Amino acid sequence: MKSARRRSRELAMQGLYQWLLSGAPAGEIDAQLRDAQGFDKADTEHLDAILHGVIRESATLSADLAPCLDRPIDQLSPVERAVLLVAAYEFKSHLDIPYRVVINEAVELAKTFGGADGYKYVNGVLDKLALKLRPAETQVGRGQRS
Image (cartoon, rainbow, N blue to C red; front, side):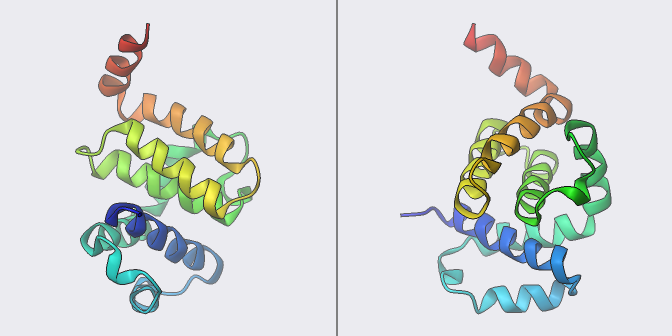
């Protein structure tokens, strides 16, 4: 069974995918998500935070991601772009979620919704982004590995 947080990330990612393709207003996308199958099983507070936070901060999040990418962000598939934006937002705004959990959840989203090897790309980008946005936490994590 999926956790409420995972379901909220899935729905947020789907909403952001729609937003990236259509440019529809956040409120319209939000209303459609509330009718989605499984909405009742989602952590709605987390979903709202991600969806509205990413849309509100998309320019900043995209700028944070840019140095970690091998091409301009608008050349990524909409699925990979949405997944990376969700993770970048969680890195910055949800410090209570360990960076490894953010990466693992993003990889799972990419495996579920993205292309065959998209999750590998997402993992690599987020490893770099974690070093930039969560330096103290990633140093502790790397120190424990050796």
